[in-house]
Amino acid sequence: MDLKWGDVLAAASLANLAYIRNASLLFGMRGRSAYWLKADPSPPGLVALLLNNLVLGLFFFVLFRGIRRWENAPPNGASRVIRVMAGLVLLAVAVVLIFGFCIFLQSTPLSPWVGLGHPRTLVLAEISGLLLPIAYWTDRKRILRAARLVLILLSPLVVLTFARSIIQISTYDPNYLANRPLASRLAVPRSGPHVVWVVFDEWDAALTFSERPAGLDLPEIDRLRRESFYADQVIPPGPNTDRSMPALTIGKPVSSVEPDGPADLSITFTGGATAHWSTYPTVFSDARKLGFDTGVVAWGLPYCRVLSASLTGCYWDVWNGYDSQNVAHVMRNQLRSLVETQFHSLLGQSLGTQANAWLYHRLFEESKRVVCGQDYNLTLLHLPVPHPPFFYDRRTGRDDYGSNPLPSLRSRGAGYLDALSLVDRSIGDLRRAMEAAGVWDSTTLLLSADHPYRERGLVDGKSVVPRVPFLVKLAGRQGGGTCSVRFSALITKDLLLALLRNEVATAADLNQWILSHRSAFPEM
Image (tube, rainbow, N blue to C red; front, side):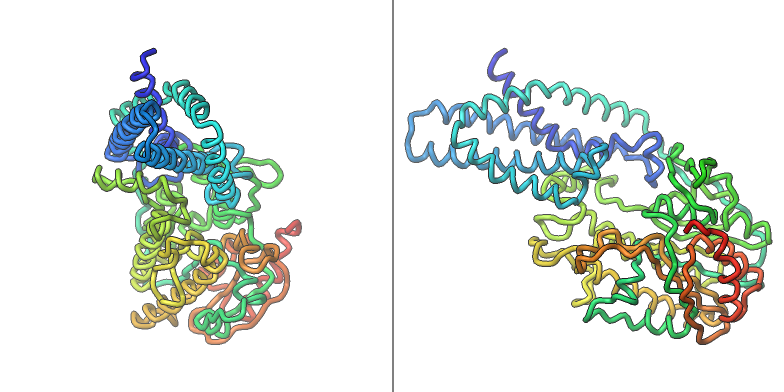
């Protein structure tokens, strides 16, 4: 094979590998994986991927040809400097490739060992940064020949990338992931009870209450606890959102879940029975049978597709840091993603962090609008804080956490404490908005979480405590009490229905209700 064409193949292959993470995001979200998407990856995102491959491939081709010419040139000071600079560029590219490939492994069975944002990913990149220069300057020509051969052997993947992109562009359907039609209104909302169920994603009970770190002030949460019924021994229904939220809405323990296309979830209950989330009775379908309207404002899970038949109103969203209708914008984001993870970036806040900030503010504004308008008798607010990536800095009171390009200066543990401060601020903002609208006293709120902070060790080195917050502010009541008996959060569904039926009116009623229902899940 002509050396020139060999360089073409190697350059195209290297560019393709550099964008493997972006390709996996755009190609891996069809079929079952589309369950987590709000919209199908748009043609501009795919066009941007192809253009970035061409631009980066051209850069590598010019670099390869230059290295070949400089290697054969008579040695002098200028050629030595150029060779060193070219070598440093290639080594930087190699480290980025290794780093990106480790992130790509999140979608493989190896993800528990090295995946998105995992410390081992950083370690592998750092080790590569140490070993590759040694290997390069020990036997530069052999290293370059071996790398070139590997790239040529992997060059058929370029054809697959372009073919897959063209096919996906030609089959793009903007309605593929559209929300399903919602249920009709049943009642005049203001004439009945109003129960708001607030789930703060990954809200840790221990770090918020019993083991709160020194210096973390949460005045709004403390105030609400004094005015509400608080349970301090509540067990989460699962280790993550994908399992916990279906289990909470159904009120049964779930052992595993598996997406069944973009608009349904196959659920396996503890004991082996299976069902689909879309057709199994939930707190929303049961509330409608009682004549109540239901609404959801949420993130992460496609409530508006899966549970639409039981919802009078619904809004949901997800992170979106790479897709846009502007090709140039997406190209910049894809190029930037080569030097960042979901949590950290060499350029300041990562795209994932910025997207999470946008998502939070959009959902929180919609949440305030819905609860203040009392559009529904039962409303779920599933909010994306304090879930990482962290964007709020309690020291500045702004969304500038992680804006320093040296992320090691502040750990993700510190970021979680800042996110808890944002939860506190959110509760205060929600209270003030509802008070201004005159609906605070007439609304019952149940605040909890789907699971605790899974990386608790980053905060204080301790193990995760399997407990979630559980606060109930009853309508028209001030003051509450503390319940210290152990029970599962799976009772949430039946409790919400009891609140809608006005079967629980006081803190004493609530305490007695919990004592009489906690035995429903003895294995917990």
